[in-house]
Amino acid sequence: MTGRRYGCLIVLYKSDIPRKWICQCDCENKISAFADNLRSGNTRSCGCLRVEFAKRSFTRHGDTDSKEYYSWYNMQQRCYNPKNRSFKHYGGRGISVCERWNLYENFLSDMGRRPTGLILDRINNSGNYEPSNCWWTTRSQSNKNRRPFDRNRQKNGDKSAYCDIERP
Image 1 (spheres, helix red, strand yellow):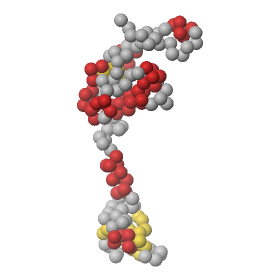
Image 2 (cartoon, rainbow, N blue to C red; image 1 turned 30 degrees about the vertical axis):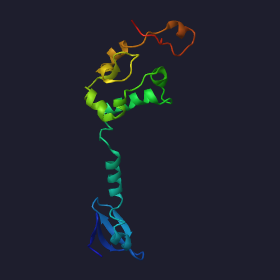
Image 3 (cartoon, rainbow, N blue to C red; image 1 turned 90 degrees about the horizontal axis):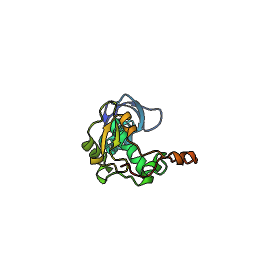
Image 4 (cartoon, rainbow, N blue to C red; image 1 turned 180 degrees about the vertical axis):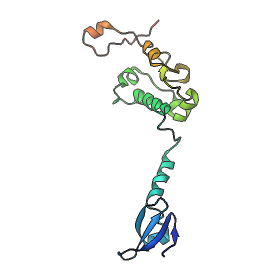
């Protein structure tokens, strides 16, 4: 068996353990494998193929490390996850995400790439997250786009000092 290739593995030499062989994977890792598993195709790599297959199987868009994905994910969490600390200001007030944007790819298609220094904001703060009500804006502009602050509620110790009324 020495020198033969099985998947990503090349058999180097016989192990001290009966019926086992030491193999080197294309990724440079060395493993010991039973001869029967090599011949049957049950062992084809050191495990790196399984990891690579899982990555390809579960990755829909390959964009999970992007700023746009981060914005989309946090938008979903604020609207639909009651354990999210901002849920009471979003999903708790009835704000939702349009059905089309349940898929990240559609969100990205509608909003485009996030320009540097900008954040996702809703134009009408009482409106839902949807293409006609969202834009990339500066944090400063977003801070001006808030619900009115109710000082009476704050004085009475109410932590939710923002009114639930729409501005004129």
